Length: 317
Ligand SMILES: Cc1cc2nc3c(=O)[nH]c(=O)nc-3n(C[C@H](O)[C@H](O)[C@H](O)COP(=O)(O)OP(=O)(O)OC[C@H]3O[C@@H](n4cnc5c(N)ncnc54)[C@H](O)[C@@H]3O)c2cc1C
Image (cartoon, rainbow, N blue to C red; front, side, top):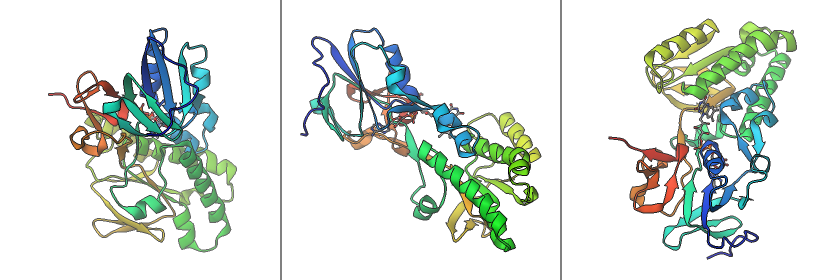
């Protein structure tokens, strides 16, 4: 076992609750525990909470990262016996009631896993290498730079094929993130481009939204899907449904029906996989690597370990 994390005070007679992940789930529960008779330790890879729903705005230059990043030390200022450590949690050792992290190990009485999820490329390494994803601030800023660079390069080229590739923006995945991105790019074409790039013909900017399913926003009602479809179509977004992406190489996105679209800017927002921690028997992990939980969010057979948020899978009968 590695050394214990230093400088976390002795918990005395209190029970220690360790929360891994300060996303939506982690900060909600940490706030609820304020003033309760527990010692609480919050561990996260970053020193800030990230409000992911507005990442697409950062990616399309609408807002700055500071508008959606909230330092944990500010959120939890004044909380008693509340300790924050920035580290990556690597593994759970349920028998020892201990976790190992990048800065040492730590014992818990109760463990709450709230580690969220990451982009799933379903094993397609080419897509992972060449497309833009949108789960972190770093990715959003990378996307923003790529979009602006594409506009600049499109201005500088006489080659119509190259310009077409630079001005074509493809979004793969028509869930909430995909439709928000498509809408934001369409608004950029309408309101920003004519002012910021007056020498660029805005009609050359194409936005294409692709999904393997038969409707947009499959997790919402079919009425919502229809309304969003109408709205995006009005904004000039091309929508391709029932199409699966096979490959993307040399600015060529190939679909399963053999057709292809040329583009230098492809976003992959077509799936996620849970960041669930290692250390549990295989039967504790469900589809998408999510940790299976009961109605109290307890991981099966581990009464003192809970999983919440995107990393948890609660199956109701
Ligand atoms: C672009 C985008 C738009 C979205 N729009 C919406 C929306 O409109 N409405 C909606 O309801 N939802 C939306 N979502 C989804 C929503 O953001 C998530 O459902 C929510 O953030 C999940 O909360 P969580 O606490 O499970 O995980 P997260 O908020 O992802 O937090 C996980 C935390 O765990 C930390 N972490 C992960 N692994 C480790 C580790 N090993 N060690 C230490 N720390 C770790 C991470 O740094 C992070 O802080 C959107 C998501 C994205 C990406």
